[in-house]
Image (cartoon, rainbow, N blue to C red):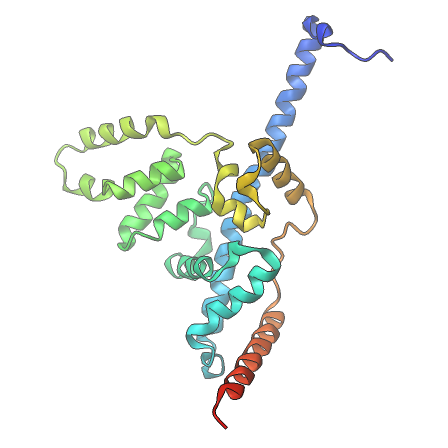
Length: 249
């Protein structure tokens, strides 16, 4: 079989075939990559739920106190990377507390969207921003802008809501998210545990994400509650031993 040369692509039939194949590959890659958002949001919600339920489950577990998140972070970051450090675990716990009904979440939104929403103290405003962001297809940057400019509060206070909406639409018109923008999101990259992601070219990040997603374990498989409890007990025992050794004799 003769291998097509660059000049052969001038053949309209071959060019059409290449165009169709490229489109299929591009669409497939986007579906795979966008799956990260859904999996990430669901996993963060589940982690938050497990942490909250662990904290609420009796006095025996209260002994971990304020050290729980740092203890969990030490174990999880060692295996899954800094996407599960104490700061991110704190966000995940707050995520579950702010959105305790998983079915009420808007799955069009990414974890970065929800991190912005968690900065909104007012429950009604937070719910409105969530639904509006999904309905209007706001990027996470656009949502952040709307929150920072008190868009919800200005709409409620205005007698001319049309002009407020038009002004906001004008500002975010050029902030539409590219389908590829999220692969540069450090929150996503940390969550997936990609090493040295900041030093990679965009195409390398995309390929690494695809390989990560197509791998059977996704780097998203969480330890069971029993495994977490065992790890916590080991950490507690080690801490108690250190404290004992530090006591004056």
